[in-house]
Length: 111
Image (cartoon, rainbow, N blue to C red):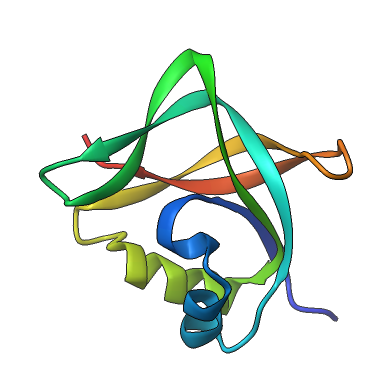
């Protein structure tokens, strides 16, 4: 039985291939993408980019496909999930190169 995988919509530092390679020891399948219903912001309190819900907006980033659950846990740790910084939400992402839609996780700031 193959390992379960998920898709992850990323923006900011996780779009960098060298960063991904250092965190999960590989570069996953990546597609330029947009996620509907969110907009990108700079959060001064966190000192980094974040996303907030906005039904009228969309934001651009990268769709990472085939992320294993172990890799997802490593990325959760990097993003501070469980420590109060970010949480994971499900979004619909559209790959801009293939025009295909996929469900994906995305990191957003905890409120």
